[in-house]
Image 1 (cartoon, rainbow, N blue to C red):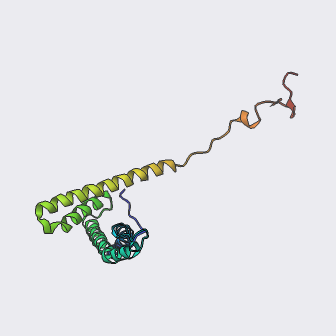
Image 2: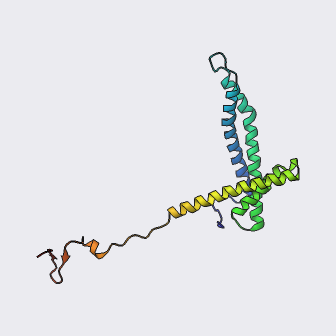
Image 3: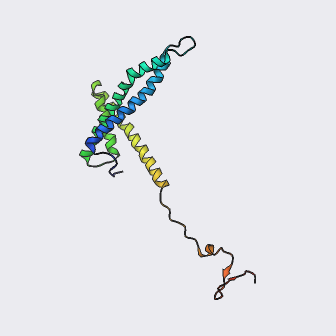
Length: 178
């Protein structure tokens, strides 16, 4: 778990990358969610679905960017704290994500007061701890199933077929029973 992930960008750039990725994920998810919700909350016109599509489009335009922005702020703040914790601890392990989740949850809830901020931080830390734990279990399971196995070396008897044996000195197989 203490190995460095070389497939990701270095820390200053990963913050912007995570912010954009989280915004996109929130915007796409918000489009699906608010599209369905807007369609369901629109009135039907006597036997046809006349107002469903305009209602869905209005809900998507109004709420999907907001949800994308909320996701983006969370992703950018989490990534910022993650990079900060990596810089301070000089380690890369699961505790970085747990600490960054605690700090992100607390920072986003600070306007509600310190008690709420600590509670929200604890809940985000626990949530990120669950994510990291499940990730570690999946990684361990996948590593066991891909463990290299030594090839089986056949015995001398099974190579000759186990039936006819070669008589010493003759060079020809002996016929059993003769």
